[in-house]
Image (cartoon, rainbow over all chains, first blue to last red):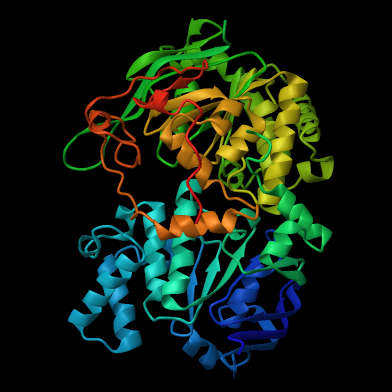
Amino acid sequence: MTLLAIRGLTVDFSGARPVRAVDGVDLDVAPRECLAIVGESGSGKSQLLLACVGLLAANGRADGSARFEGVELLGTGDRAAAVRGRGIGFVFQDASGSLTPHRRIGDQLAEVAQAAHGLDRLAARAEAVRLLEAVRLPEAARRLRQYPHELSGGMRQRVALALALAARPRLLFADEPTTALDVTVQAEILALLASLCREFGMALLLVTHDLGVVASLADRIAVMRGGRLLETTASPAFLAGPRDPYGASLLAAVPTLAGLR
Amino acid sequence: MSLLELRGVTVRYRQPGAKARMLAAVDSVQLAVGEREMLGLVGESGCGKTTLGRAILGLVPLAAGEVRWRGQRIDDLGRRAFRPLRRELQCVFQDPHACFDPRMTVAESVAEPLRALERGLAAAARERRAIERLEEVGLGRELAERYPHQLSGGQLQRAGIARALVVDPAFVVCDEPVSALDVSVQGQIVELLERIRAGRGLASLFISHNLAVVARLCARVTVMYRGRIVEAGPRGQIVGQPLHPYTRELLDAVPGIDAGARARLLARAANARPARDTGAGADGCAYAARCPHALARCRAERPPLRPGPDGRQVACHRAEEWPGGLPPAPAV
């Protein structure tokens, strides 16, 4: 069964110059699958994610259909809100944006664990430690008392991941989760995402401008441009040769070490 | 004689916190850049690569060592004495949106350095020069009169390059000039920089955290870790037969788009080490805490940067043990 089924999804922004950011997109995400949407800035890939969970800006409007486990998310503000966290978790490019700067990491994690699973304070705290261990943060117990600014960018992204996992979502939306990071840290976070999806039995919908980021992680690759989906191809076939010339140009743009040895 | 030469350059910052400890952000760095050369500098966040660029530009005081430009020391010059050098040494930054005044048009911003550095120039001549430079980087007149928020990231970075070129410098520090851009735009900016290097015979230091980007552009590559140079040499040697384990790590971290990329990611996930805490360095090799090949000696004794077997430089006690270079991390 399909976990997330998007049909004819269109996102419009009103204003002095109205913009159609997403234009009639059909897309399915299967349980435990990793699907990557690749496109340049302004291709509409982030708006697609935000529309599904009712997080568009005030002047944005989504039409069409997006069903999560059979439940329609569009046009029903409350239902989209209900699915956030427990059904669909989020990780964004800027981890600091997901974390409250003046609250300890442990309190933030425990709050979500409490709300999602009805745990008492002690159990929520133990859950917070387990989550930090799941994202391979050393000295998890000590980290609970730290504030976000005391951590490096890579560690903050791990905490943001732990926060997204706290409600045990079946699907994780990751919007450019490694773009702000160094290549060495990026490689670690990608490897972590791969193992977390297995451990938690979670599907992943990853959005990025960098094909290098998703080539190793994605089962399928979807290419987006100007609000439209150009192609959706199984990863190995895509890497062997994308069907669409635009996909090929994105692949050619990835800086690799080929030919330099 | 090299155009630019750094000898034992050390920059220390006071570490935040109650105890006033000094941290060497740049530690005894030697390097030289020749005429028309684009030298690559690679390392992760916090390794001191930006501070090194600032030291070259006279923007941070040195704790030790010297910077020589055309053979003359320039690190001990005062602000006023350094002024003529500002025309020769320019820089391009990572985030173009952060270094343009939002209230000025692009052309005004590009012309701005001329007001300070070529005072004899009339306003019309300044504008003419700005337009010329914008055209050189591929931006037409219609974009020159726009404001920064009306340009895309790639267009604005081109304008950033035009501003660096407006005084016709001899050397440019390019500090992560493509890291904030879409991958597809990165390639265009890299091409532009290469065209400018070849066309103008401009020397530069190209700084990035991605070894693939650096090696595409630069014939010689310097690898920096925690303020120290750990390996330096021709890109073929650095990429093909890395002698320092940190260079190996940087190479393994470059995202692959080949059929084997998935197997490598799964291998990395399988033996994932916990996230690192980058504490203060001890007496030994700064990389020892992370190094899969570290011995007791590595933790006790700092390896000096020394000539390797094939002419490159390497700072590793064990470099002779893998003469053909360290092999890639195994895939599953």
